[in-house]
Image (tube, rainbow, N blue to C red; front, side, top):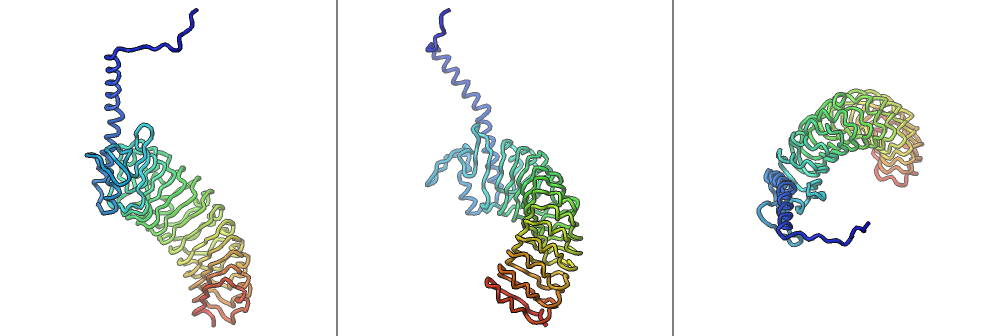
Length: 386
């Protein structure tokens, strides 16, 4: 049997070649080119909805449908894949928008829902139509001047891993889909006016590593669910209206390194179970209404660098067991009810830099061992020693 000729070349008539090219152009105009045009229009509509300032105007200059725009470094056209802050995949679909800290002010129009391939959004506010972005894994809106509401279904797709909307004017409650958002890893909602009940709006997050809720208007009690967040390393709910007692189950979140519950309405005793948080190096419970003694188990936090219990109703003798916290740098017991003498063991805190024991009920002379604190920068004993 004769072999196949690998070098055989089939020559098509010119009219067939022309027809083939026309078909390709038609396919482009009806699919990819249409997609690019629709994406460009959605982005320009969003640009037009913003309150323009010099920073925003300069940054988004390339977002233009009408003509080619040139700068000293780049040449842009009406293809959004060439625009500042836009990244596309190999098919011309917008997959990434990055405009963080660009002084944006305004809201996002409903047409943003046309960017169905978007996987990362780093820019501004969210209309409900953002629920169409079911592939969204990261929502980064921090450090702009945006306002509005978070869509209820922000985590309905089950792929959201990071949400960062700090430093805005959001006044809404937490979306219901966030309660059981098992995929979420990092949540940064700080410095807004978010509201919601801590015992009802937050669930169990098996993959949560970082939770920042400080400076909002959250209320209600902390539940035992936080103890089930086994990967949690940072929990900040400071400057809210959280009430009730600290749940002992919080001691089960053994990966915690930073715990800040300051400036709330917490009452009751400090749970001894917090001594199980052996990786903790920042513990801030100041400006609450906590009472009782400091549990001896707190002395087991060997990595502790900052301990702030100021402005509570804690009492009893100065906790000698803290001498085991050899890395302690900042100690603040201001405005409590600690009594008795300052123990000589304080001289063993060789890493101490700042100590505030003011406004307590301490008595007696200062121990000479204070002279061993060679790194000490500030020592406040005002209105405390009698």
